[in-house]
Image (tube, rainbow, N blue to C red):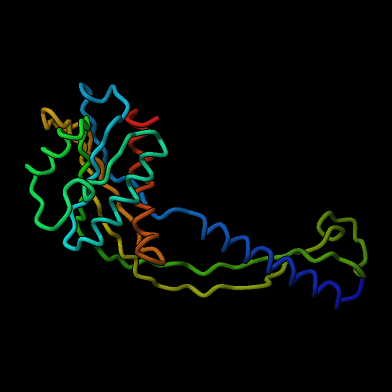
Length: 217
Protein backbone atom coordinates (compact mmCIF):
# COMPACT_ATOMS: atom_id res chain seq x y z
CA UNK A 1 0.00 0.00 0.00
CA UNK A 2 1.47 3.37 -0.96
CA UNK A 3 1.57 6.50 1.22
CA UNK A 4 -0.81 8.29 -1.18
CA UNK A 5 -3.53 5.67 -0.59
CA UNK A 6 -3.01 5.79 3.18
CA UNK A 7 -3.39 9.58 3.22
CA UNK A 8 -6.65 9.39 1.30
CA UNK A 9 -8.05 6.79 3.67
CA UNK A 10 -7.09 8.87 6.67
CA UNK A 11 -8.83 11.90 5.17
CA UNK A 12 -11.99 9.85 4.63
CA UNK A 13 -11.86 8.61 8.22
CA UNK A 14 -11.41 12.16 9.54
CA UNK A 15 -14.27 13.59 7.49
CA UNK A 16 -16.51 10.70 8.53
CA UNK A 17 -15.81 11.42 12.20
CA UNK A 18 -16.45 15.16 11.80
CA UNK A 19 -19.67 14.71 9.83
CA UNK A 20 -20.96 12.15 12.35
CA UNK A 21 -20.19 14.59 15.18
CA UNK A 22 -22.08 17.39 13.43
CA UNK A 23 -25.02 15.09 12.75
CA UNK A 24 -25.28 14.07 16.40
CA UNK A 25 -25.02 17.70 17.55
CA UNK A 26 -27.79 18.74 15.16
CA UNK A 27 -30.19 16.03 16.35
CA UNK A 28 -30.13 16.82 20.05
CA UNK A 29 -32.69 19.00 21.84
CA UNK A 30 -31.61 22.13 23.74
CA UNK A 31 -34.14 22.13 26.60
CA UNK A 32 -34.15 20.72 30.09
CA UNK A 33 -36.74 20.74 32.89
CA UNK A 34 -35.03 22.48 35.80
CA UNK A 35 -37.94 21.98 38.23
CA UNK A 36 -41.27 20.18 38.26
CA UNK A 37 -44.02 19.78 40.85
CA UNK A 38 -47.35 17.97 40.74
CA UNK A 39 -50.36 17.93 43.07
CA UNK A 40 -50.64 14.29 44.18
CA UNK A 41 -54.38 14.68 44.80
CA UNK A 42 -55.12 15.83 41.25
CA UNK A 43 -52.41 14.08 39.26
CA UNK A 44 -54.17 10.70 38.89
CA UNK A 45 -55.73 11.59 35.55
CA UNK A 46 -54.95 11.86 31.89
CA UNK A 47 -55.33 15.28 30.37
CA UNK A 48 -58.70 15.39 28.63
CA UNK A 49 -59.90 18.76 27.49
CA UNK A 50 -57.14 21.38 27.91
CA UNK A 51 -57.36 25.09 27.17
CA UNK A 52 -53.85 26.10 26.09
CA UNK A 53 -52.90 29.66 27.01
CA UNK A 54 -49.67 31.48 26.12
CA UNK A 55 -49.01 34.77 27.89
CA UNK A 56 -47.36 37.01 25.30
CA UNK A 57 -47.24 40.70 24.42
CA UNK A 58 -47.60 40.06 20.69
CA UNK A 59 -50.69 38.26 19.43
CA UNK A 60 -48.69 36.54 16.70
CA UNK A 61 -46.35 35.04 19.32
CA UNK A 62 -49.33 33.96 21.43
CA UNK A 63 -51.02 32.29 18.45
CA UNK A 64 -47.87 30.51 17.24
CA UNK A 65 -47.03 29.10 20.68
CA UNK A 66 -50.60 28.03 21.47
CA UNK A 67 -51.02 26.34 18.08
CA UNK A 68 -47.71 24.46 18.41
CA UNK A 69 -48.38 23.36 22.00
CA UNK A 70 -51.96 22.34 21.15
CA UNK A 71 -50.78 20.25 18.21
CA UNK A 72 -48.19 18.46 20.38
CA UNK A 73 -50.72 17.76 23.14
CA UNK A 74 -53.26 16.40 20.70
CA UNK A 75 -50.75 13.86 19.44
CA UNK A 76 -51.35 12.34 22.88
CA UNK A 77 -55.16 12.64 22.54
CA UNK A 78 -55.42 15.41 25.15
CA UNK A 79 -58.36 17.22 23.52
CA UNK A 80 -56.42 20.51 23.63
CA UNK A 81 -57.82 23.81 22.33
CA UNK A 82 -55.82 27.00 21.70
CA UNK A 83 -57.23 29.86 23.75
CA UNK A 84 -56.96 32.40 20.92
CA UNK A 85 -59.68 30.48 19.07
CA UNK A 86 -62.11 31.08 21.96
CA UNK A 87 -60.85 34.36 23.42
CA UNK A 88 -59.17 36.32 20.62
CA UNK A 89 -57.60 39.74 20.87
CA UNK A 90 -55.25 41.50 23.29
CA UNK A 91 -55.74 42.24 26.99
CA UNK A 92 -57.32 38.88 27.82
CA UNK A 93 -58.18 38.50 31.51
CA UNK A 94 -58.01 35.43 33.73
CA UNK A 95 -61.78 35.62 34.19
CA UNK A 96 -62.33 35.43 30.43
CA UNK A 97 -60.03 32.42 30.13
CA UNK A 98 -61.76 30.54 32.96
CA UNK A 99 -65.21 31.36 31.58
CA UNK A 100 -64.20 30.16 28.09
CA UNK A 101 -62.79 26.89 29.45
CA UNK A 102 -65.96 26.19 31.45
CA UNK A 103 -68.22 27.04 28.54
CA UNK A 104 -66.26 24.65 26.29
CA UNK A 105 -66.36 21.92 28.99
CA UNK A 106 -62.56 21.76 29.16
CA UNK A 107 -61.34 20.16 32.38
CA UNK A 108 -58.02 21.98 32.67
CA UNK A 109 -56.24 25.22 31.76
CA UNK A 110 -52.56 25.17 30.78
CA UNK A 111 -50.87 28.57 31.08
CA UNK A 112 -47.33 29.13 29.75
CA UNK A 113 -45.36 32.32 30.20
CA UNK A 114 -41.86 33.55 29.43
CA UNK A 115 -39.73 34.43 32.47
CA UNK A 116 -36.70 35.91 30.71
CA UNK A 117 -33.20 35.04 29.58
CA UNK A 118 -29.72 34.76 31.08
CA UNK A 119 -26.25 34.68 29.52
CA UNK A 120 -23.31 32.52 30.62
CA UNK A 121 -19.81 32.23 29.16
CA UNK A 122 -18.76 28.63 28.46
CA UNK A 123 -15.20 27.40 27.85
CA UNK A 124 -14.72 24.62 25.30
CA UNK A 125 -11.29 22.96 25.56
CA UNK A 126 -9.46 21.97 22.41
CA UNK A 127 -9.90 18.46 21.01
CA UNK A 128 -7.22 16.30 19.38
CA UNK A 129 -8.35 13.72 16.81
CA UNK A 130 -6.16 10.65 16.41
CA UNK A 131 -5.88 7.94 13.78
CA UNK A 132 -3.94 4.68 13.64
CA UNK A 133 -1.47 4.08 10.81
CA UNK A 134 -0.53 0.52 9.83
CA UNK A 135 3.13 -0.23 10.33
CA UNK A 136 3.81 -1.32 6.73
CA UNK A 137 7.48 -1.32 5.90
CA UNK A 138 8.58 -1.37 9.53
CA UNK A 139 10.51 -4.40 10.79
CA UNK A 140 8.61 -6.63 13.19
CA UNK A 141 10.47 -6.47 16.52
CA UNK A 142 8.22 -8.86 18.42
CA UNK A 143 6.09 -6.17 20.11
CA UNK A 144 2.30 -5.99 19.83
CA UNK A 145 2.30 -2.27 19.05
CA UNK A 146 5.08 -2.57 16.52
CA UNK A 147 3.14 -5.14 14.52
CA UNK A 148 -0.32 -3.56 14.55
CA UNK A 149 0.52 0.09 13.97
CA UNK A 150 0.84 3.36 15.83
CA UNK A 151 -1.39 6.36 16.63
CA UNK A 152 -0.74 9.85 15.38
CA UNK A 153 -2.50 13.23 15.50
CA UNK A 154 -4.55 14.15 12.42
CA UNK A 155 -6.51 17.23 13.53
CA UNK A 156 -6.81 19.69 16.39
CA UNK A 157 -9.66 22.01 17.40
CA UNK A 158 -8.55 25.20 19.13
CA UNK A 159 -10.11 25.97 22.55
CA UNK A 160 -12.81 28.66 22.37
CA UNK A 161 -15.14 30.67 24.62
CA UNK A 162 -18.82 30.96 23.69
CA UNK A 163 -21.80 32.72 25.24
CA UNK A 164 -24.88 30.62 25.89
CA UNK A 165 -28.19 32.46 26.13
CA UNK A 166 -30.74 30.46 28.13
CA UNK A 167 -34.46 31.22 27.90
CA UNK A 168 -36.71 30.24 30.81
CA UNK A 169 -40.37 29.29 30.40
CA UNK A 170 -42.83 28.16 33.10
CA UNK A 171 -46.03 26.21 32.51
CA UNK A 172 -48.86 25.84 35.04
CA UNK A 173 -51.77 23.45 34.78
CA UNK A 174 -54.99 24.27 36.66
CA UNK A 175 -58.27 22.49 37.26
CA UNK A 176 -60.94 24.51 35.50
CA UNK A 177 -63.77 24.28 38.04
CA UNK A 178 -61.78 24.87 41.24
CA UNK A 179 -58.77 26.66 39.61
CA UNK A 180 -56.54 24.56 41.89
CA UNK A 181 -53.00 23.98 40.59
CA UNK A 182 -52.25 20.49 39.26
CA UNK A 183 -48.73 20.79 37.82
CA UNK A 184 -45.93 23.26 37.24
CA UNK A 185 -42.69 22.86 35.30
CA UNK A 186 -39.85 25.22 34.43
CA UNK A 187 -38.11 24.67 31.09
CA UNK A 188 -34.71 26.15 30.31
CA UNK A 189 -33.74 26.31 26.65
CA UNK A 190 -30.40 27.28 25.14
CA UNK A 191 -30.90 29.62 22.20
CA UNK A 192 -31.36 27.57 19.05
CA UNK A 193 -30.90 28.42 15.40
CA UNK A 194 -34.37 29.99 15.15
CA UNK A 195 -37.30 31.09 17.30
CA UNK A 196 -39.39 28.16 16.07
CA UNK A 197 -36.64 25.71 17.08
CA UNK A 198 -36.45 27.38 20.48
CA UNK A 199 -40.24 27.12 20.90
CA UNK A 200 -40.41 23.50 19.80
CA UNK A 201 -37.54 22.43 22.06
CA UNK A 202 -39.29 24.00 25.06
CA UNK A 203 -42.62 22.39 24.19
CA UNK A 204 -41.01 18.99 23.76
CA UNK A 205 -39.43 19.21 27.20
CA UNK A 206 -42.75 20.20 28.80
CA UNK A 207 -44.59 17.40 27.00
CA UNK A 208 -41.96 14.98 28.24
CA UNK A 209 -42.47 16.08 31.84
CA UNK A 210 -46.26 15.80 31.56
CA UNK A 211 -45.74 12.20 30.46
CA UNK A 212 -43.26 11.59 33.24
CA UNK A 213 -45.74 12.87 35.82
CA UNK A 214 -48.45 10.59 34.44
CA UNK A 215 -50.63 13.38 33.06
CA UNK A 216 -50.25 12.30 29.44
CA UNK A 217 -50.26 8.89 27.78
